Image 1 (tube, helix red, strand yellow):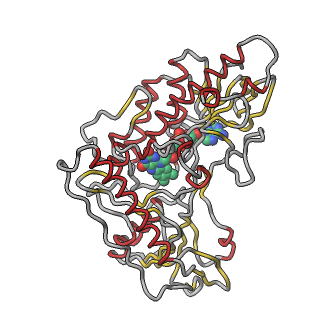
Image 2 (cartoon, helix red, strand yellow; image 1 turned 135 degrees about the vertical axis):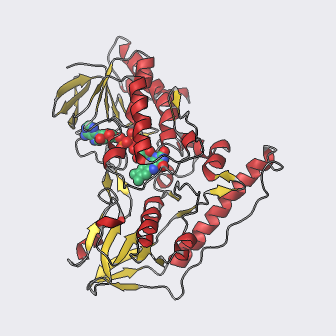
Image 3 (tube, helix red, strand yellow; image 1 turned 90 degrees about the vertical axis):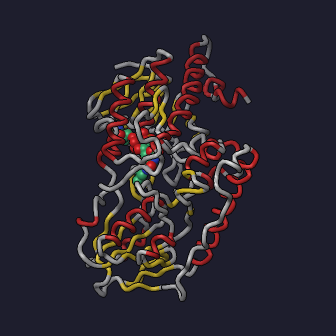
Length: 429
Ligand SMILES: Cc1cc2nc3c(=O)[nH]c(=O)nc-3n(C[C@H](O)[C@H](O)[C@H](O)COP(=O)(O)OP(=O)(O)OC[C@H]3O[C@@H](n4cnc5c(N)ncnc54)[C@H](O)[C@@H]3O)c2cc1C
């Protein structure tokens, strides 16, 4: 089969790209291994709600228009939202189609799937950035008596044995899972490394509202000093609970979660934690202050100061003293470890040399280091908000410009040169 563009993945990123391709009448197909919104249907735990408010569910030419703009969607609601978007976009979608290989072919690409092959000139990788949970190598030292769970196979506390749980990782996923497991009566120890603290509400408004209106979420990849580092920044400790509660470390300590430092190793059935917890917490408090400073400066400059409550700062994170440095995993107190230590993308099927030694895609703002190949949906792909639903909107609208310009350049008769792969962004600058 032949088409101009193959979009791989039928999540928000793939659907957004399909909408933009259709708007430009670019012939394409969207290949999805499961169904629309597969990741939201199959890889999230039961109680999860979006941590982004409903008003922030914006996709190309489409946005949330329900009665609760400040609420937070449950997973069935997210699936419903994306299914409605898919029905509206009406993409040339082929579900139940797993792509097993993409390789360079005849000046374009050959995309091989379990349902057949497509030859195309351009490819969009919209397969998601959170496909595989990161489980550190130290997991090999966990004694057999302790069960291990990752966020993609975790559903609810009920699936865990009674008894203590060690949750490793204190970003959005770790703090949310730690909270509900602790509330289920299983005592949680939370291993905390570098983290980003955030209040749900600040000066009477949602923190995402502030970050949206002040332009913080729109900050571009070419505006930050160190994009490699920016792409690795952990997600903010937030949850979308109906009571708009905070999910920071103080909130967790208050319900009895025990805080320890980063998991540094496991030896002789004992978990060893770094003594850096205080430092990590002080750093997170400092960074939070800086974020709130930026918000306050923006509020003052925008004349909002009289409309919202005055600035304030949050209580410092309370760090237990002395720090716990060792935890016996074999003594029966810990029954389960939840590895909330991050996710990584899976490009094992990509037979084009665009993945680095760490398994990350090599790209410049979603323009992959291979002519005619584009990606959407990765952290800080083009903007700070790139991995959010909201990010797919602006990123898709930018990437379609890149992709269309590439096709136009290819259409110019004459030998294809390296210039044919220059991104529209590079040629504009
Ligand atoms: C726990 C968690 C909570 C999140 N919470 C929020 C939130 O509150 N708000 C927010 O805006 N964002 C949130 N995100 C981030 C982000 O919006 C989601 O990860 C989102 O699913 C990304 O959309 P996507 O289209 O880029 O990727 P995905 O939704 O992952 O879509 C990729 C699609 O590609 C398909 N696919 C993968 N490989 C292949 C293949 N080889 N062949 C064919 N199809 C393939 C998958 O089945 C999937 O349907 C969260 C992410 C996680 C992990």
